[in-house]
Image (tube, rainbow, N blue to C red; front, side, top):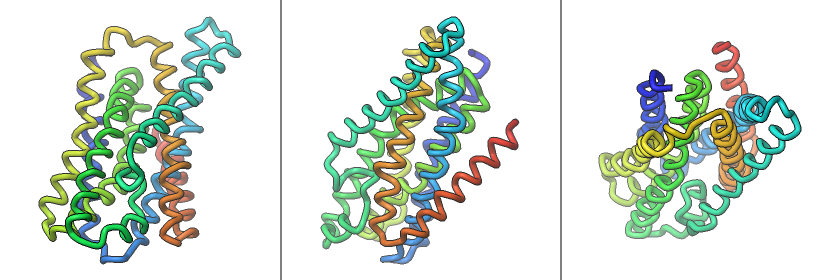
Length: 267
């Protein structure tokens, strides 16, 4: 796997820096215009749901079946358990973060609470911190996956990058509206995303000597669970709160189409 280390680091860095893209996009969104954010959240959910169920989870279960001597029942059982453990992990993380400060909960509720610049600034900063917490395990997941399979690592990096774009918007919008400073809004978004490659560094130094087919299968299953939970529990409900139901669903469908096309092209 050593020869894949540079590629794994590069993919993780690019996925993390996608929050900066979201920050840039936010500068061109008019105040009170929620259509772009609604569509982006739906798009990210579509990408993550499709890649989780069609690519990541089947690949993980295949690895576990092979690791346990082609025992299909045992390998599938471990894969399914790890999938739901991944869901549980992100559910606990979200439970520990107050709702108004959760990066996936930037909605009209927050706008209603944030009537002054100080409140908006606080929301933006805490959102950036919460986003950093979420990005850390994502960085580990992207890195270890790319080590084992660069093509699958690229797929996961694409999905996480797309997922990070609306999160970048959620970080930068309140800070920009609070301060009018685009550089400051971009800086907070950038710093929250840079945590992702830090997760890759941790993965390299702590996990490199222990990676095998069983560990990779369990990690991939957990990643699939994390991505599905974020999509269903956070991205889609947040998009719905803007009152743009059909627009968010169009985003979901287009996200699935784009990811399906990218997977076909990678065959």
